[in-house]
Image 1 (cartoon, chains in turn green, cyan):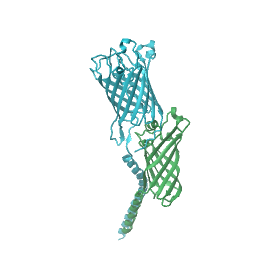
Image 2 (cartoon, each protein chain N blue to C red):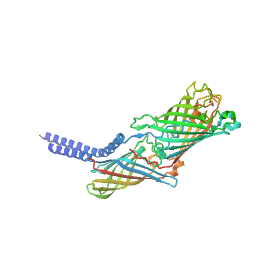
Image 3 (cartoon, each protein chain N blue to C red):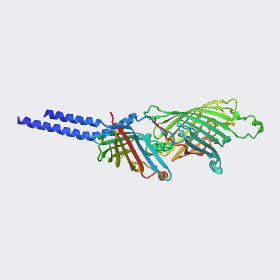
Image 4 (cartoon, helix red, strand yellow):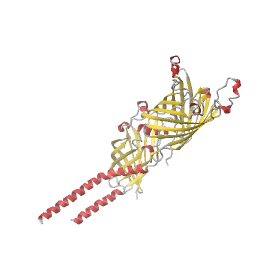
Length: 181
Length: 316
C-alpha cells in the first residue's frame, strides 16, 4: 500500500515536471487598429510575454501598455495618459485555454477556439475567439484576430473625438514559440 | 486487528482525498501561475519605461517645459496676450489690445528639438535649442527627474524713430541670450513640478548699475483636475541687485496662472500673467507689470501638433 502511495506521489510530481516544460516567448506581437474617415490609429507591440502549457493547452499573455508604438507619438502619449492610464494600470493580460483538435508534437495547421479572461485598464472580461496554431519544425505559431470595445473596459472616449475612434477596435495577435530549454 | 484495518482504510482515504485536492488545486494553480509567472517577469525585465506626459504642452505659461515635439513632429504655437485688465470697461478690460508670439517647434530627434518664434513686442525674433539630457523612468524607478538643457536667443528689430538713438541701438545691442537647465518630475499622474535655474545675458541693459549677466530661478507646475484639464502656475524669480529697471520702470517677477485644456492634437491654455512678453530674456528680466496694481494680462496659448514623419522608433 505504501509503495502504491509513493508511486502515486511520484506520478503527481512528474506531472508538475510536465507543467514546467512550457513554451515561452518575450517577443510576441499584439497590434490594434482603428480606421475611420477622420483618423487611422494603430499601436503595435513586439514585446509581448506569452507562455503556453503544451499539456493542458493553457496560455497566458502579458504586455506593457507603454510598449505600444504608434506612428504618431502624440497619440501614444494620449493613449497612455488619457485612455488606458498606464501609470495606474501598466499591464494588459490574458489567461485562457485553447480548445480544438491540436497535436503540438506534429507539424500541421490547427483551427482552435481560445477562451479566457482579458484584463485591461483594471477590468477583466471573458473573451472567446478563434485562432490558428501552426506547428512547423518545432516552432509553434499562434495567431488570432478579434474585436474589443474600449467602453467594455471602462476606457472613456470624449464625445469630441468619438468619431475618430472605431466603436470596435481590431486586435491582432501573433506569437511564435520555440521550446523553452 | 479489525480496528487496525479500519484505521488503515481511513488513513488511505485521507491520503487519497488530500491528493485529489492537491491535483485539483494544481490544475487551477497551473493556469493562475502561468499568468503570474509571466506577469511578474514582465514587471521585472520588461525594459525601461520612461515617464510620459509630464506636462501637456511645451509651455507652462511662458516657461518652456521639458516636453518637446517627438522626432519628426512639428508644433505650431500661438501665444496671445490681451492688454491689462486694469484698463477698465472703456478698453473692455484690456481686450482691445493684443500682443502675440507665433512659434514653430520641431523635433529633430526625440531628445533634440529646435524652435523659432516672432513676437509683436518690439518685433522680436527668437530661436532656441532644447536637449533632453535625462528622462525620468517609472520602471525601474531609477531616474527620479527629467532634465533638459535649453538655450535661447532673442533679437528685436523694432525701428527707433529718434535718429540720434539709432546708432546706440546697433544690432549687437538688440541681442539677448538665455541658458537654462530644466529639471522636472512627474510626482503622480496629477502633479508635475519643474524648476529652472536660468542665466541671462543682455548685450544692453537700462543703466550702468545693471548687470549684463543675470541669474534667475523659475519654478512651475501643473495639477490635473480631469484627464484632459489641468491648472498650472509658474513664478520667475529674478535674484535681487542685478537689474533695477526696464525703460525706466521698476521690475517685477513674473507670476502666471493657466488652465490647460487638451483636445486631441490641440492644447488650449487660458492664462493670467503680469508679463506681457513671451521670451525668456523679456519675461524674466523685463517684466514691469505688477499683480498688486492689476497689471494682469489675460491671454491664451494654443498649440497644434503636426506629424511630418511617422514616428516608429525601434525599441532597444
